[in-house]
Each structure stands twice: as C-alpha cells, then as structure tokens.
Length: 260
Image (cartoon, rainbow, N blue to C red; front, top):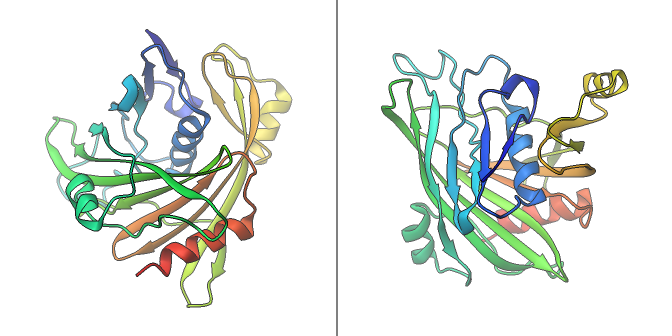
C-alpha cells in the first residue's frame, strides 16, 4: 500500500492519503489542496482518511472551521465517513435526495456540450476530540465530460453546527443579480522527497505557485474555481486542465443557478 502525504508544511502531520493499487487523479489532488489552502491558519483540524469508491482512500478536505466562534462547547477535530454512493446515470430529484440526503441544483447537459457523467455522494461526520459527532456534512460531487475533457461541480450542504470559510476571489454579479466568486491559481506538484529551493519559497510566498507533494508527482497545473451559495448549499465549479475559460465557468454557474 502506498501513501500520499505532506500537502504542505502546515498540515504535514494532519493529512494522510492511502491508495490501494490506484493512483489518485489530478482532480482529487487539486481539489483537496485547494480546500486545504483556503482554510484559515488558526483552524485546528485533523483530516482523516475517508474511503472513496474504487478502493481509493482520499483525504476529505471538507471546509469546516474549528474556531471558538463556531462552537460553544465542542470543537471539530476530525472528519470520518464515506463518499461511496455512486450514480452513473442522470438522477431524478428523488434519487438524488435518497442518495445524497439533500437535493442540490444540477444539470444534465450544459449549453457548451458538457454532459453529466457521474455523481458521488455521501454524508460525513464531523467529530470532536473525543470522537463524538457534532455535525453532519452532506456532499455531492458531479463530473461532466465532453470529448475526453472534464470539469467538476461540488455541492455541499452547509453544516448546522459549524461554519465554513467565506468565499474569496473576484466577485462576478450575474444578470439575475446572483453573486459568484472566481479564483484561479497555479499549482506545482512535486515528489514527496522534494526539497524546496529558495526560489520555490519566494514563489510560494508571493503567490506565484501553490505547492503540493506526493509520490511520483512532478507537474504544474492551472486550477480554477467558481463558487456561490444558494439555499444553504455551497456550490463549487472546478476546472484543472484549462479546457474552460473564466467566462465558460461563470456561464456554467449561471446555468446551474437558473435550473428550476
């Protein structure tokens, strides 16, 4: 069994990902690192491995803050559970409610030709230091595909007893008045034993690159996300291979928002 650890120095001891004979996808690695990077430095959260489908153990980077303002007497210390419910045909709202435990907005086909491919869903437990559950986090992760290219939409029901980070990035107001936030960054993936150079440290400090470390990784990737909230659900559109522009992603978000 191989391990994938050390996304950055701040979470070196907090994050572990194990893979059973399957290498994690670029999407998984980028999505995890993006959400971890967004978390505030004073969060005291231990990320536990969460079993995904196909035998992959992924570090579940659900955005749950653990500051005193979020909890009066309890504090989230770990996340546990599984995101192993899979629907590979476009679900009805009833199927979505049964599978995910909530019904986000979702689209079968977008005007740019991308079509629904699969959705994974699950309910995760947010636990305190004594492993007592203090909240539940329901999530549904949609994949859309066209001619071998993919993008992803994550819908996460905001937990009742916790808060998640504010959305950041460039504010874009849609024609219907809805606000969405666009953010992009360059991600540099390096092998687990890679030692950062002085230039790397400068690049990280000034925001030129975000760094992540893992087995057999050595590439640079442009990452983009558009986020918004509606009816207590946080939506995030992710793209990792430059097959979509900022305008494309904003249009995708608008089509989801306008879905009846």
